[in-house]
Image (cartoon, rainbow, N blue to C red; front, top):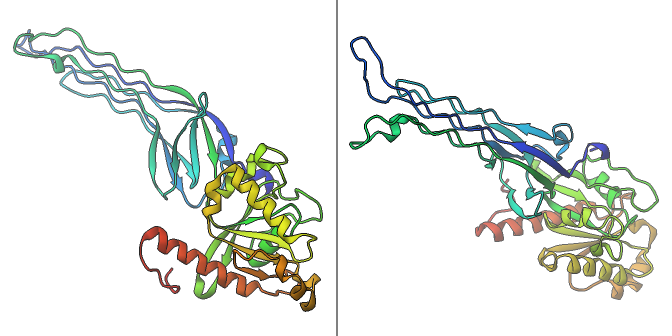
Length: 345
């Protein structure tokens, strides 16, 4: 996905439709000069509705559509005819999109399910016609309600990527390269920090036609939780990954030190991130030999599974996919409260 096409934050103007006015009409026909009230209700103004779509990965469409208005409800009329409802406007967004009030910043809701729909801005109610107000003590009401005005507001849409696995590491540790060799994604790859400025997504093909989504998150630097570097722009994406794959180069000067930096930044940003299951991959394994691996085994954190991988030689890639898929299945079992066999889609 091209960087310019990845939009994860937009502020949009929305206006729902006005409700139509009710009718203050009286029945008239040949030979009937004083018929009773028969004014119908006005139609409801159009809603603005948000719909989740698992086939979308970006808020790019809103970059060119920052103003959305729904149509007004129709007027009520005689013979108890109600006005037509205004046409609803449906805005499709990727799963993992959260909605905030632009003024207060308060989170209103989050879209997590495919084809799930939520009313973002409700249309105004239609006014009641005079027939609604008829009673035994007041048989000729000569008034009707006006329609309720629509709502005018600004909302913020913010995307938090939904992926099965999120790659976490310092800048320039081989995350993008790893994603490129295990999936069909083509992230920008270069030997300098912050090559990845937006998350890259890839579908990893597993055995028997199975697959899972992997996200390459821009590199973490020390102080990221305070907004340094790319800061909160990418840390929020980590929240929406079911599991985390920590990436540290096999030839790093201080493996444990890099791991501690990553853990601390996640902890300071959101302690709940440490509850996510995680695996460590030691990338660029082609740069170290077996003797060096044995010498450095005490430097590897002992509180999580780890594996050496190399995008150059292919070392460990198949085994890494096995580890990740088993981790994903275990997560689904836990969240669904049921046993999911490895062969199940």
